[in-house]
Length: 195
Image 1 (cartoon, rainbow, N blue to C red):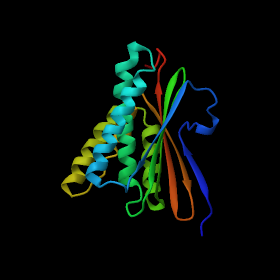
Image 2 (cartoon, rainbow, N blue to C red):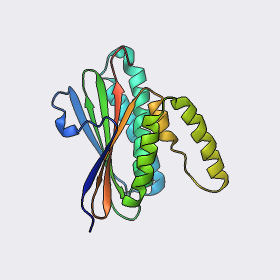
Image 3 (cartoon, one colour):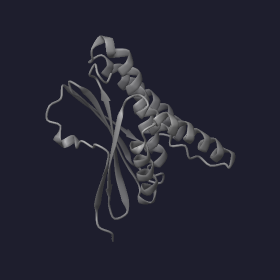
Image 4 (cartoon, rainbow, N blue to C red):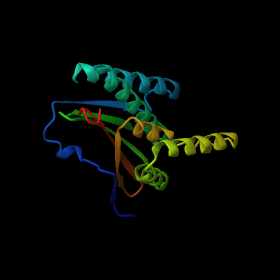
């Protein structure tokens, strides 16, 4: 039995430490309660719903941008949760949103196999460590096309596309004896300087 360990990547803000927020909500999706085709449709509709609702609580001038960015972020993160979550177990994907005066915090939490964590860590550190996200995007596009020709799926483009929208990402990976709980944080800025 291995001991429990927590790995943080990037500027991760623990949701338990958020004392000041204007609004919060939680969406829970049971991944095994519907078939895969409906689950893919569900994550898109869920993300669209969150984008529609949450855009109403920001400055009207930023409403369309926040709606678009939040939808994009939620789709990518929920999709990753489904793709890399436990395929043979019933598990819940939790999406928590917090609105602060200067940013919208999106947490997506899911359970995954520990064997997937080294790839996630490598990908996360690569994305956060790059000084040219557009160049990395082009490189990963080429790699994805080459992998597809070999019948593989390995793009890592979702996280990169999120970062390209001026959203900061961070992760907390809690490694248990058999599984890992992954919390991905997307920080969407609302201030004039960043928005």
